[in-house]
Image 1 (spheres, rainbow, N blue to C red):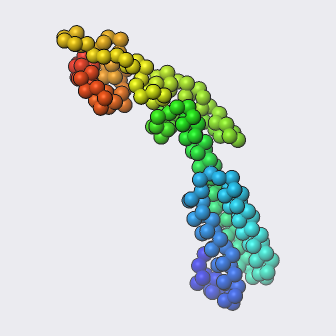
Image 2: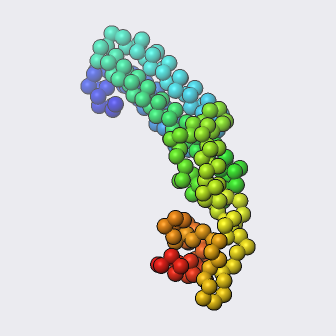
Image 3: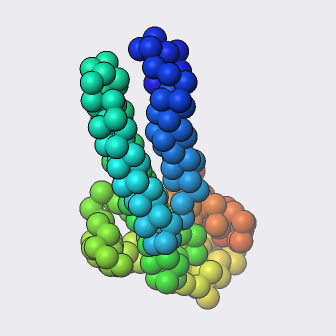
Length: 209
């Protein structure tokens, strides 16, 4: 909607200002605030109230101009835009609430880097029910078994306390080689290169790389 459109309908300046102020300004304000929402309940309640107020303003304006068919049609279109904006806002708020709850749960689960762990999760199978994330526990259990180094102590259980063998014997055969086809793991390769370059070389050579 723009001012030229309303002027073309022959409306007076006062009516145009009312339409622009009651709809355009309020919807832009809500969208701007939505971008800054961090999932706080007080903010969510405030935005929902603003949406209800905007709906009422449109209804009141519609009654005042009921004899103007063109403006009535424009208000109906604005109501549809309002409905779409409401749905988009709710989806954004729901997503932010989900992300907030997920990162908090991952931190509580001992994830060293919640964002890295999140990337390995199938978030489509995780649903936020109140303050509970359904479907998260099973995925975390599997990750802790397959990628234990992402949680808890700095060293993964398979390498904790182990040292590379001296001489031609190579690395301890009990270590899962992150270069092998069976245990290939780029994250673990990077950790080894950083923390134990000698073991990194031995495991890489052992896997024929």
